[in-house]
Length: 152
Image (tube, rainbow, N blue to C red):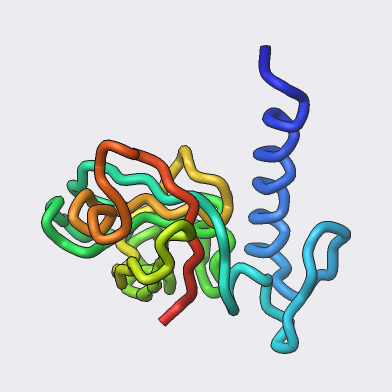
C-alpha cells in the first residue's frame, strides 16, 4: 500500500511546476526564493538521486546514444524551468544546459553532462544519466545513488 506521502508529494510538485510556469514571480508556501527571485532548484547546489537510462530521441529533440555524457532532469524541473512555454519542449531553455554531478559517497567522483531529456520517474532534483555518465559516479550494478549537483 502506498503511503500518503508518496501520493501527495508528486501532486504538490506538479502544482509547484504549474504555478512557476504560469506565474514565476508568485510567492508560495512551499518554496524559498533566491536573491534573484528564482526557484531554489535553478541555482546553487542540489541533492537528489542519480539513475541511468537508455537514450534515444529526448524531450529536447536530440537523438543521443548511451556513450554520450547527457542526462535527463525531472519532468517537474523541466516543466517549471523559467522561459519554457509548456508547449514546444524542443525550445525549453533547459535543453543544452550543463550540470556537474557528484557521488555523495565518493565526492571525488564527478561527471559533467548536458541536459537533453526529461525524466517522468524522477523526483524534482533527481538526474537520470546515460550509462557512460553514471559510470563516472558509480558502478552500473548499483543502479541508484545519492548525488549532489550544480548548474555549470
